[in-house]
Image (cartoon, rainbow, N blue to C red; front, side, top):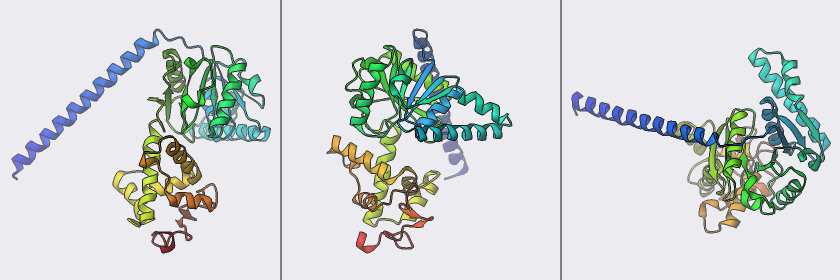
Length: 347
């Protein structure tokens, strides 16, 4: 190949790239225009938000909602958990204010003044315009909760779940007014992560959908739309990827260290899949896969790898416990040799 041919190829690739960029820009412009037109017919009356669940996700949602000037009721059955949630919110807000050179005390007061806490769900949702559930991933518990919420909340209130793996349709099965339900799937830590998935069921009304989108945008998130499909977008791609990494490992195709380095250095991921599993929680990932596999038994990618189940059964849940695939930054010696390969007896 001569220099002329190489230059010709480079110009051709550049033309293709510029064409794709223009096409993408045009599509985004069209989508923005369509949303703007729809918004003219949209009735948005969300001022008061009730968040059910005072854990990391619930407290994070309460924080970003209060920071966006919404009045928030944060509810949990455990009053001690609520105290910890407010303390965590105060520390997070102060840390951000310090980085921005703002008055930390004033910033904390501004956010926490909009948050009330309590243990009575019915009282918290009685005047709510939007209710967001962020409790354990247990279908019957969520179903019972939403039945109780619908009885106590105003008829116009939108009911949303933060589920990461369960079907929104199944969760809302006992709700009578299903046109005002949907999913708002946040990511941990909520104040930091920029994405929220808005999930619509077959019954979700257009106005409910637009209200969920507007709320997500109001609190500063990039909102993406998704139908009520297993895992929505992020987890539908992420969880099977994590499962495949475990299967590679348990077959002995590659070592723990090499699998993680491959995805960090080969694809630019900030951490490898097995490190990420320790961060997410081995038990959390197993429960998601088990649920999907039960609902869709023919999908091989939804099958829980035997090694993952053995590690969870042995108490290795990841960073929140005594380690998972890694213990103190090194391959877990119970399952792997010093090079990160599965020990013979666990092959």
